[in-house]
Length: 521
Image (cartoon, rainbow, N blue to C red; front, side):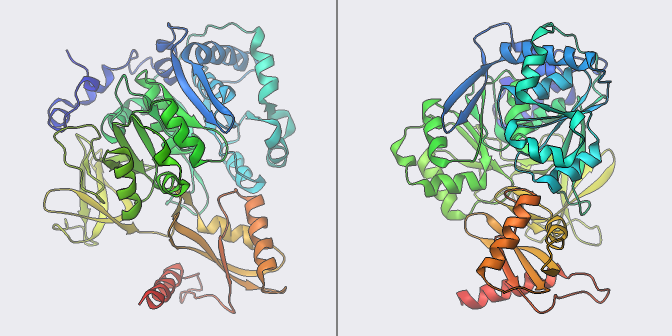
């Protein structure tokens, strides 16, 4: 019987898809299942088979399934010997590297919960998450050691180089003893459900569910040469850029260090990448690099997520790669639910559309009274799961052909350059600065990032000049994350507030929209 990965058409997806067929693509059963085995060990027989091509400014480093398998087995044995119990958390704050993949899969194999941390977190950003998940170990490199030491006790911090030396004496074989329902990964997001970061908790079963999004969202199939430049500390980079392709035995690519569009497009050429899944900002940066036209590409399938692509960038990208760029839509909390079926010869991609539901999913646009909105009427996108309608907190609408479209965020969360950013987290950090009396943060339109973070500051003192602005920006960047700071700062005498005394971010957004309209009129 054919596996789901052998079908490519939209019609086949609708006809052949079932949960049972997803399970047929894996070795394990619900009673005995481990992500580490499914993504790595079962593909390790060939010692030359490449799992990940790590791209950085200095070149391309291929890492094989065999290398990751043996080293992650050693780590699993080490963790057990160290007393790490099933369900304990093992966090790691590493760029894509051998140590990253060994940490991710080694913790999963021994039954611990893998917790990837974004490498640009400052001490405040890291401490919030460490206090939430209380890891037994935090694995970092030398550069991030000072940040780690501010966030947690020194006896729970391990340097990646020391770790690789420590595990060398342990056996290169390990048999996982987990089930599909055992907890596997804590994924942090600024999120839409509370003001400070929450861990989205995934079991080992999640990789099976993920396969549907991979097959129909990124279109990944065995034989693809895949690349996802998004950080594997976040949902897109970890689940769609790392676990999904590896689970299908597909070689994936990752980008280490600060993203450089020139290095990236050269790697796409060198590696002859056929399937690319990136954030909208990556495509904008390719367009702005001025060098993409110097390269030749083998692209067959392309996708993006995180935010809409502006029409000019979309036109440029599709002209450059000679392929449709397909949106896939979801959130860290609910996963991907709307896709554009990259590679399906019988599916028409509509520019600007979020696509259609993944097979088996029921999605609607609903009005505030709960009624289903007719085509072209905006409401909230909701998903039926386990008999309950779950709100996405995003607005949208459908057209007469059943395609979905995004109508903006239904809450205050800012999506900038593909990053999900909590305004409250930035506000609270700004309020720690001695010159800040009050602070309010919103997203404002930005040609490169989609939205840029803007802070309104009521100052206690100090000059309201560029030096003061830079001081506040540097302070926030150092405490939270290199991407999580106000790129625009405006000093005001008072903030717009609700009658209850809360900051009225909607009013601030409306005021900014009015200013933009007046400037462009």
